Image (cartoon, rainbow over all chains, first blue to last red; front, side):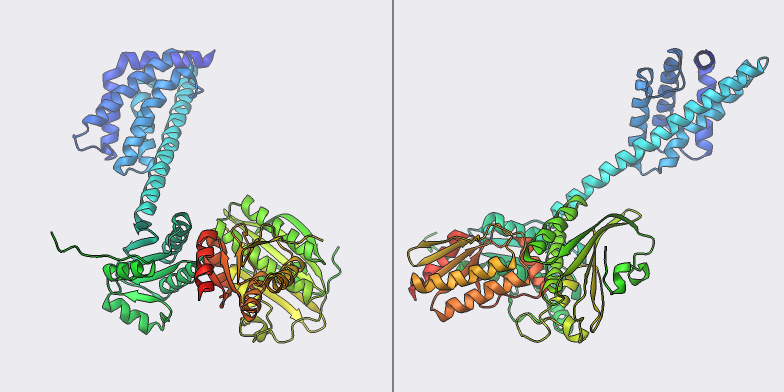
Amino acid sequence: MSTNNDAAQLATLIQKFNEPILQGWFEQLKSKAMTFDSGAGDATRKHCAQFLSLLGAAAQRGQLENIEGREWDDVRQLLAEVSANRARQGATPSETAIFVFSLKQALFPFLRSELEKQPEQLASATWSITGLLEQLGLYTVQVFQESRDRIIARQQQELLELSTPVVKLWQNILALPLIGTLDSARTQVVMENLLQKIIETGAAIAIIDITGVPTVDTLVAQHLLKTIAAARLMGADCIISGIRPQIAQTIVHLGVNLEDVITKATLADAFLIALERTGAKITVDNKG
Amino acid sequence: MSGYATPAFAFTPNLLPIAGAVVQQSQTLPLHSDEHVVMLRKVVRERAIELQFGLVDQTKLVTAASEIARNTLKYGGGGEVRLQNLMIGLKAGICLTFVDDGPGIVDMERALTDGFTSGGGLGLGLGGARRLVDDFEICTAPGEGTAVILIKWKR
Amino acid sequence: MERIPILRMGKLLLVTIQVDMHDRLAMTLQDDLTDRIVKDEAKGVLIDISALDLVDSFIGRMISNTAAMARVLDATTVVVGMQPAVAITLVELGLTLTGVKTALNVEKGVALLEKSMRR
């Protein structure tokens, strides 16, 4: 079967010309400025060597058409590692695919010289090997995307957790310390989360502390007010604390109406009010 | 199917920013009784869940639908509502078109102002419903009936 | 015809709304509640809406009206268990339910009612 022949050809080729092919390949990668690691290409060299040897081993098992087969498991595994590695280092998907594609240029001179007297075999082998390397190159792109998607999803989750820390200060009292710039979308998520936590903990009062928020625009102010109105409808109350002078100015400028809302300069003051409201009290024991 | 006079039911795409949308799962429900309104709420909720709308967006859309459905029933003398799923590229949305053959709305400005507690406006809840959805169109003329289109997109 | 059951707990009336109410049912509830406040000499009404995933302007007005009528009859009304999505939607609709006290759950609602009934 012709592909078996081609597979055998590839295996033999790699066996016979391992070193020069590696050298040629590495030169190709260097010329495209694609070695990517700080160890002057050491890691890349290692990857190339491993890949070539696994490629030869897989080719020996007889078929070049389907890389999903068991014989190609090791090759796919290695490519997945290389791909994930590059994704972490900030490479683009095509740069990673080119890692595989540039092997073609290193292989073909040797293929030509071995088969120059057998043009049909040469044509067939060229065709099969090209197809194989294309599949493997595309595989790296696929793995790259999947790995990037996972990184992004994880980062989004971490970001969300960082930005929605609802703290139970005391029985019936929650605090939501907001940090960083608030945009409309983020504010909505954070506020919905607060309302949910109010239900879950049965808190009567939620303190929204905006000490860590540099600026507040109309949209964000409106979201804040809507959240407070919603909390009231549900049966809880809100206090805004940590309003810095600049934000106070902005709020007045924007004409935002904070008449029905209790506002305090510090979280501590807000906490005291909340304690009062919920019927608790702090007493200081002067004995110590 | 529909003998309604208002042109909106012919669904002209340039009425709203939905040119190029693929329309799927078109369904028409009657609005002639209280039970029909309850049924509509259920169907809209199911559609929104199917398209994976967030809970708050689901609630907003169903509430808006309930408001307009009630108007159609009480002030429009009954009518119909057409439900459609829209797809523009990867963006999915639900479009609701309400029509009736009633007296139409004479004072649009008043109708769109909120009037729940103050008693001003016409208490039609149109202004509120508009705030709950992304795209809102109303087409009406005295003696010719009314059509209201609501669209909410999945965020 | 279906009716929403009203339970009595001492001087309190307790209503749990668990179905998607159509307008007629809501009006019937409003009438029934007003009747019972008079008949049972109730001083407090607790309306539990924790099972409602939708409150539109009609139901909102029904609740406001019920509270207003109860007040005229010297009874306090507390609404408990509003879901966050419902609260957010009501705020957007512009329905403020003024004159209606709210609490997070039945326990807090009863506490609130008892406090206001003691005055």
